[in-house]
Amino acid sequence: LNSLSESINNLSAALERQENLRKRLTSDVAHELRTPVTTLQSHLEAFIDGVWEPDQKRLRGLHEETVRIGNMINDLEKLSRYDYEARLDLSNFDLADILQSIQEMYGIKFSESKKILKVDSEHLPFTGDKDRIKQALVNLLDNALKYTKEKDQVEIRAFLEKRNIVIEVKDTGTGIREEHLPYIFERFYRADDSRNRSTGGSGIGLSIVKSIVEAHGGTISVTSKPEEGTCFRITLPSAS
Image (cartoon, rainbow, N blue to C red; front, side):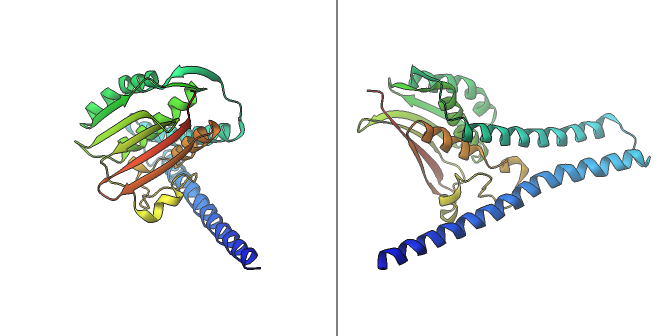
């Protein structure tokens, strides 16, 4: 009876957490859509009423809001694809090659932002979906790029540990408060309550990362301290 009671209490707490996340999801989606739609509506009404002339500057602003809506729809479609397409396009490859290509792709972006990117990997043969693994790492780097300041460092390294492959993406950025850590892999959850446009995004990047890692039989965890930095740790079964 004690065990049953404890299980029921745990289930109740889990259901309450899911309900709170569902409410937050609805609120966040409504907020993300409301802002660009309201802007489009008000501008178009001004054009129709003859209050504004549809000059290049105002049309460019409307285009940017349309792109924002399109990006959100693309993110939703991408998340749906990762949720429901269980089939992986498996191949044999070296994770060191993936990290090297990411360094070449992101090195310029980090330099332009005056941030430091370090990549370190040993020879690690792996069997998996090359494109999806790369997408997961790119999402983590995008996240790190958003939440770091000038002269901050982001390091991505891969190594073998107890017959498992471990990939760590570590930064010296703003960090995440402890109360947010259990929920950051939930879709649409964002730790920055201000919903700042430059960092808020759609809140599904980390959800996609988790889906990709778990599809490969792996796990992902995070440790963080405010104003000190964050470390995402992916553990994948080794091919050896």
